[in-house]
Length: 296
Image (cartoon, helix red, strand yellow):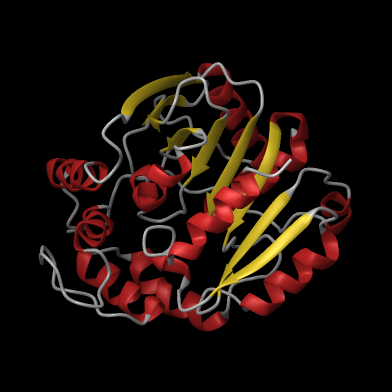
């Protein structure tokens, strides 16, 4: 028993989406890998911003705390990754199997939205996808922000992988909850709680639990981007590192990115861990993003 139930997952997803701005709308974009679900908000004539969530149980709903601020200056498009938890639907058993497939999928999403070039941002695994896409198709990326990216500039810590292994091998709501409590270092209320002081947001946490056992495809993995490719990237990049991340060494991530990317701004987000992003981030996160996107 994995604990996954489709109706429970959808109800949890909708509760988090209710925290988005009132003008949000859902769109379905056809791609060669199936239909991609996109949550949109903000002025239709504003420059486009595409947001990619992290891996695991993350979905586009996780951007709820940033959607209102970002949609004041951008048309926000937040994507559910194909083959991952969310409302995107695979085309049979077809799903991205290589980095090139992921880049083609993201190109197809932009095409389906009628977008030629966009600002693109991602968290964790979503940042890894966004960076690879920018390296392959830089003309389609105006600005790029990477929120505590994994496997881009440094590898995972061994302790992190050991803690994550039981959850990955046999995901259950209880294991998801215990893992998030360890990584974030903050209180985790019991499942379906309505609030608990300095705790992860209960509706968001319930969505992570509800995603346990989701029938997802094997995620695309691969090596970190080649140093020469990173040195050649001319797209402006904002790198935001979680100071308390247990996923990797935050200082190593910032230092290597600064040494390789020619047009990078780097900032450290204090008092926040990897899995508390982007929904549990300090107000400084929104300010950093708005300042970066508003730049010339």
